[in-house]
Image 1 (cartoon, rainbow, N blue to C red):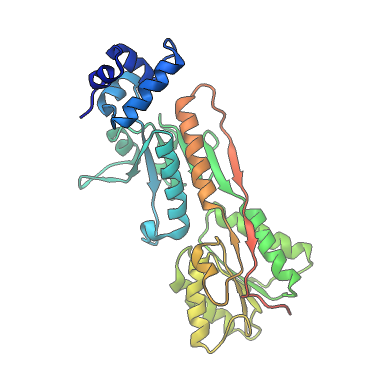
Image 2: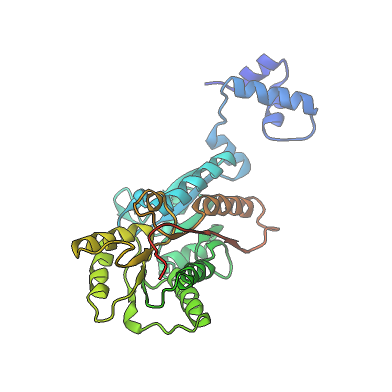
Length: 335
């Protein structure tokens, strides 16, 4: 293992000078500091994490809270894109990440206890039941947190503009001549509530009254439920001409059911998704959907969390909005 003494010997300077250069102190020349850092990199020097923690009172370890009820884990394409982007940004900023759970070594613990056990500097909350007592305890604890797609009053958040996204997607269907629009939405969350606002606002702006039976609750990332609800919609006496699904992945269940019923997209019924994941653009017909910039959400959320950790006294609590865009596919026909 390369030590500070090894670097000092290679550079011909004292160990104290090497330490100052590697820790960013300004009382040595810029040229000397750059030479020392370059030498340390070439020698593959890695600082001792325990020593650095004692010196800075920081672990440079960030907790990530991701709980998915559908048990899809990191195969969830939308959230995996967010988390991968957040991980890359954390590494760029000099931090590691640890996934937080309530099960540590086979023993149940709270999220806060796990964060303390892992000595996290802060926590990125990506997907969870935000109304649970465990999550509220974490948000109100000593740990700086940033949430994704949910806002607490005293913590920063990074959110996708779900009202605008649902509005623009619905508006597109209306401009294609559709008036009988069914909306299979996800479970009741703040994201769902915002998408419903966008959906009904667009319909109202176009003077369209949507029957209650056209608006059905499913779950995000759950094709099986959407398969059942698609059959229910298409067996109605007056079925919809287009179905909006809670997300692109869930649309696969709807597509499977339509094929079972001998119906094709978009000839017999049009369809639209949400998220803009890769699979939506390789399906045939290509799915019309609303793209959420998962990579940007992950990057900005990690940047904000590190800023909060490193500038606790001066960092502003804010909600950062990330816009998306409509992806026009071939799954919606003009009426």
